[in-house]
Length: 357
Image (tube, rainbow, N blue to C red; front, side):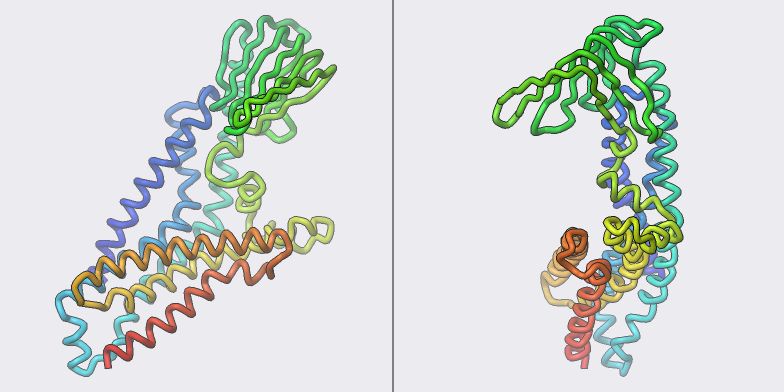
């Protein structure tokens, strides 16, 4: 147990620091100008932890088990065990038990922690948006609301703002510049949405790739900026689905009026269980991968494991996209990476037994 726990804790800590640092930089960059405090920044990071655990726990379990088994193989302890009449499959017992415990932790993170994190992050962004509305519409001052969006109004009256100008350069393929004689900046029905209600102005759309520009004039228009989906690496629709509890996901799936959302919500529902189960699959896969003592076998085992992790998430993502377009069975899309993992485990375990006999 100790041989796995030490590299497991070290791996979890290392992966968490790397991922958390990247997430912290992304959050910090995304909320520029929303007046978010350092305390709130780390709150946002805390809300992002449960989705991280759903990924980090299976991966850490794979590499920790691989490291522990690799040490046993390098010291010829596995050869001695099998030569003494021990079953090679006895090596699977401890990783299976530890993987099962971590599976429960991972499942808690995906089923309970993830909705808590998504809603907590939305509430935090909502408070930041409200503060930005109060502080970011001061006349005569350029304000960067979020990364890439700069706002300016020359004067403020009881009827709203006058001589408004702002740019939106969040999209790398195009830049949008807007000017209006007057308007208001209000909070939308969605608490994380900021609405620019504009009158008598122009919109310039510049194709930053082809350097083309076109202008549109308007009498009245509404320009929307959502600050709730600027944090994290998921699309807003996926993030909203992940923020639902098991019961809420089932309600959407059983509602015939929301048929267009059935595929995504079915996949999200099953992934909340499929991903934790991958913890056990990854732990067991590490046994036949790590039980080699030939020169260079350890490096090859880690390389193969990295490819397995990449393949697991790539196959899952590709199957999800196909299922959402109706080109692939929805349930199979949710469980396909696990099924492939189980097939690989069966093949590798058979070969491991043949070598050990």
